[in-house]
Amino acid sequence: MFQTSNALRRNVHSQVTDRVGSSIVRGEIGIGETLPPEMQICEMMDVSRTVVREAIRTLTGKGLIESRPKSGTRVRPAEQWNQLDPDVLRWHLETSDMDQYLAKLFQLRTAVEPAAAALAATHASEDDIALIRTGCDGMEAARTDEAFVAADITFHQAIYFATRNEFFWPIAQMFEITLRQSFAIAATGSHRPRALIEHRAVLDAIAAGDADAAREATVVLLAHSADDLVRIRGREFETAPRPARKR
Image (cartoon, rainbow, N blue to C red):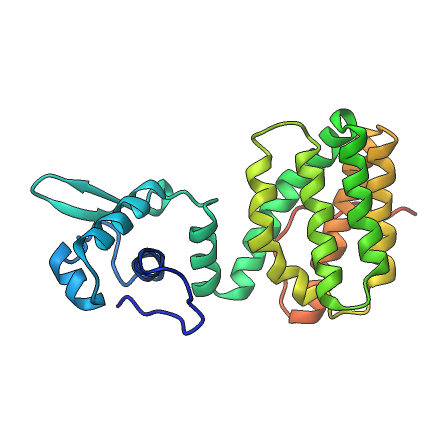
């Protein structure tokens, strides 16, 4: 319980938060179960009560736990966790089966991203379009997988921000964590020329203010992205229905 990564290089409070939070996400402390007493955690981790209390407050803010008088600090149901919190996302990523994780990610993207592109086509400012274009140009100019992935993330984040709808923005913010893994896998494929054309089609539709074209271009891009991962990973991913092939 409360294992920690060798790569963890944060302050003591962050380390305790990370170790307890990841243990909860891994299921080492089950839903409804009580955390060890405060002093026991102090002894287990060789930290002060102040540090433990601050970590408990942080995890409470993320929705993972709740403290009640006489009943201790218990783990809340996963439905009540802040699933878009960067730390919660990272803990899931570290503990989940990668193929299952990718499938869930594509379920979210196919449900939301075409709508985001359509809204961006209607509401994007010149600065928004310039940022989407920066991502697209960066992908085309990339000479390394890392640069390609960074530009790809910029492209997709910019579309969500361009909706001018703040309820889409948390999805864009989580992409820095969640999409990096799937993009890093896909970046190793030989599909880049086609992917660049498809990203450019989304950009052109948004820049032209054509919501229907932006939505359709995004559906095509996501379907082919899933196909690329299937080819690379050798696993099928459950996504939205594929666009009909033109005869």
